Amino acid sequence: MAVTIDGVEYDEKDLEPGVANSIRQVQNANAQIAQLQADLLNQQIIAQHHSKFIQDNLPETETEAPTEAADVGSPDQ
Image 1 (cartoon, rainbow, N blue to C red):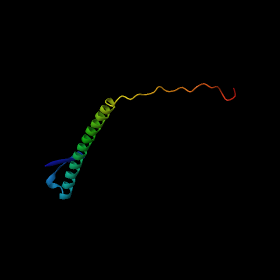
Image 2: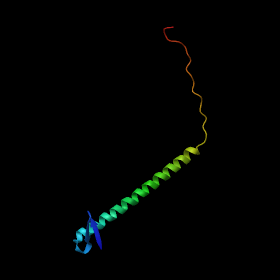
Image 3: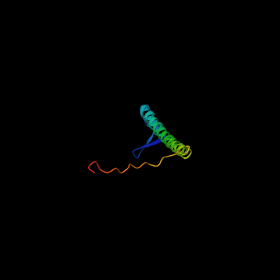
Image 4: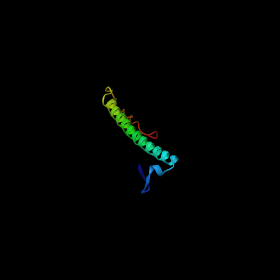
């Protein structure tokens, strides 16, 4: 199998076993990173969806109108 590194094509059988193994490890790591990124995005979407659902479905609460402070004048008056 041919593999291209930095624009140069190599036949895998010409590579040392350690190099061929490292190439597979890099490929596996990159594939796992891509999968983790996709999983992270999915979890963020799920969290956003459920957060909005919670906000939209909370029971109504009674809020009191803010009480204005009485104007009693300044202490000098």
